[in-house]
Length: 455
Image 1 (cartoon, rainbow, N blue to C red):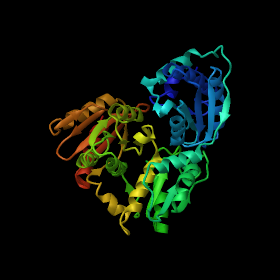
Image 2: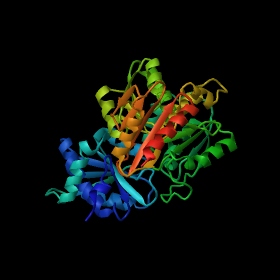
Image 3: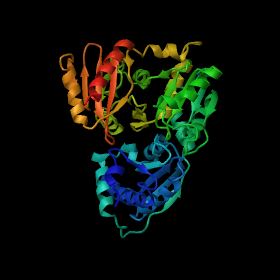
Image 4: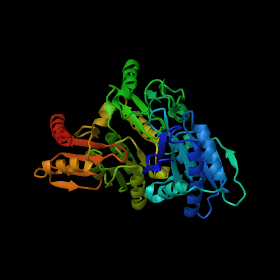
């Protein structure tokens, strides 16, 4: 019997292929999704489906499509695409969508990201729990005519649309390195960046879901080494790295130094506020304190939210926010159906550097958005996350002037803060620390880790 708790998670369906995620599961999820979106929409006339470069993708899509059409709903198959390419299809066609990907996970994984029409998120509270319950019960084909499957190629339309959202006229001919990690940026980067007249050095553009060069997970420092070395070797202005489904973007400057996603959040926020003065900008609680400070300084309204795309998108919808950013490298845009797009974030960075006064390096441009020292996310294996969190609370109770439980435990004082959050899927406690300078950050980090890891 399938352990659906291990497969259908808070935001998506994900597991090892074929032991956990296989054609039988895909068919059942397809049938359940067709029923659920019919409840949210008066006419779920079709569902748009795409997949990344993992070898199991086409077979899983075919099985999912069987489940959908068995409910009398049509399928629009857009084939190989990035996750933001699927969101574009969902938004532009006004259809619910299903993206077959395991994002940055290793090669043996696959999964399904679901959305309603207009790229609206599907999570536990917005349909995923219902889908899980239906899959557990079993979903019989509906007594209606079987739906049809059609095929569309939307890559060129997607590329044109992304470029229309960013001022790219007159940017100087930048030299950049792009590491696609054998993921979907190998397909999307040429389509989006090709017309811009850039000098692009391509790394690992071959679509290969076995990831022969390195994992397509740029949040891990080891997976950025090749990009950093190539940026220095060719004297590039910038380096860009994407995860497997290309919905996240990381950058390095001309020195090969990682650009913090918080720095990119602040940069893009300022650019979006120039277009929409006074707008709201969403940031999650582990972004740098510099982010809300800079948003406010530029006339915007910063709103803090929990970690996770469903929370960001929900708050964007509630507040009408123009932009949202997460420290994990996800960037969300109101004009992109409030969905995240790594490639759109990359275009904003390219525009900012390309329009800077001649000779201004990326590092100098980005320095204005960097104010504090951060630890990055550090995981600790714990037997009891709640007890470890309580130890931390007690250890810093006399020093903290602010305590929040919006997501895990956040404690803050004069110029410093840290957050500890349990993993949803593993026996891990995640720590993020920020302080005024590197030395004080390291001292606070080490103190917090000692408390977390004490028995």
